[in-house]
Image 1 (cartoon, rainbow, N blue to C red):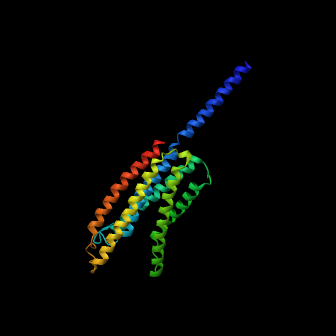
Image 2: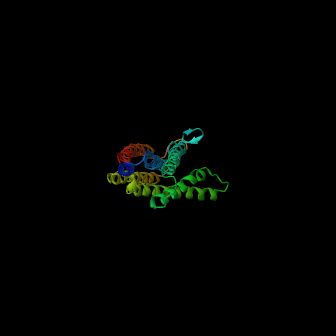
Image 3: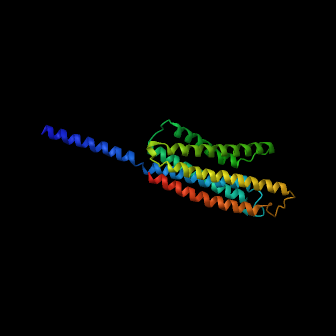
Length: 239
């Protein structure tokens, strides 16, 4: 009888080990949701918000949405979507791991979140002094670029995490999304250069030169990023 009980307990130990191994092989829904939200927030919404905020101040000049210039309206929508999804992703991972584990991915993630959290505050600040306004605009833009670099770097780090069980194919898909982001910046800077070279006074009721090309480039960027974002999300859930 004692031997039988011992064997029974031994079987339970194996079942427990097997159960633990199963959980290890298949990341939790919250972990995958964390990755999904971050991919959508940064590869799609942040990249587009960055583009609109940086290159479209002289496009849609004769239109406003809710009393806000169109470029600023879209910039806020995209960036608030990024902010909301990032906060939700942070909640998901803290609930999943039930605490903080200090490693490269978690540390860079918290640094990114800290930058993201203050960005809306900086974006809405309107000090009376012109010099202070310029300083805040530069700081807002600089921290935005740093946050994007940290977020993308952290997603590359996440692919290498054993617990994530993500195929290395995602390295290529991530690089593709970043490549689209970089190419978009190159294209828009070329258009900015052409606009300055053409010169002439800007009519407040008329878009700047090459605005139609900017709108076309933005649509191409949006479609390409959408495709890469979906592909990356698929690989987050395939593990």
